[in-house]
Length: 480
Image 1 (tube, rainbow, N blue to C red):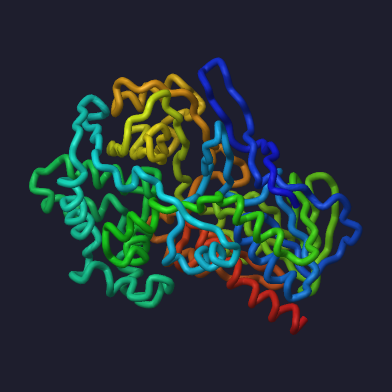
Image 2: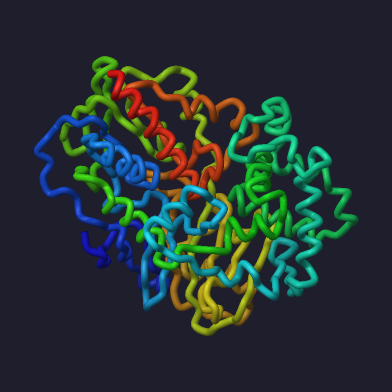
């Protein structure tokens, strides 16, 4: 498979309200298998995101016959890379770190490298207050120690920065009693608990509101505090380390380069793109039948479903899944908001901005060295990111004199195969749903970044989940 760019239906470029381009060019738009002559496999994998890709590679290298079915016209799931005017953009997930074990192993395996998001270490910050009517420009050098203190206070639920709640960050239930206690809290509940510690410093309260809202991409009352504490623990209980791990380093060659490398390493698998699955039928414990929207039928000894949690409820299982599993699927999780990139006509240098909920954009920062590209995040569905004038209006609240050249992005909330951005659980859902969602119903198996133990909602979590399930599938096939 070559490395040239092909067009995907995903993504858009908005040059102005009058000039719009649907779809973008990406190396993730690979070529399907031209003819699938066999209709029976050891494993059929539904979804060619990182969970599905890594499972396909590992199973095929164990000489299992694998059919990989993807509804989209590309691989990569909730990540893909595009290029425009010699600039590379990540449309979905993109940040990595050497302490994320699974993704760093793959980066090393394929000889990839990393680069920095410059705005993650911006020297100035714009703070938008009073529903966008008041603007403050502050020095990040002076502000960052205060942010660290606020993050410490927010995370310090047990007097030791949350260490008794998540003593082993990759084991979500190592301290189950404490987890059950703090899983009841929403992010807003915790912010309310420490409100007195701000000493009437409304600026710092609003910065915390903006940062936390961006993480869950919605109202703080709907996002679970425990997911914040998980990020905090994975970030070594330290603000600077957390920021570095979640938003500073990217794969220089692009996430799609990694996805293609994994695909190219698969041994003789069959890949069907643009093939939504209609139903998953179990005749008995030894055979699964997959019916696609275009009328194709395939059978396998097992099936691995890697569909994002917020879209999994659409899957038709016959016979139905266990009641508790279907309940957890139907509840879904926070839907997330928007992520998009803005190309400016003129550079603005190293910059970032914060605005508390319900600002349509809660956080934005420059991505390149000159400061001509801004990565922006919005909450819920408060901003139509395809509306050129609306985006420019909101951004000018922070940067009054800027001129936008174009907007490029993908609306994950309206994406029927994802129905949301990265995963974030609501209060109580980790203790009530996570273990259930991770359970298998052989010959059906499940994997997703949304149900990983460690870096859930990151590529690392997708890889972890896909690698973990392979062992169970292999054991099942050997005993079948």
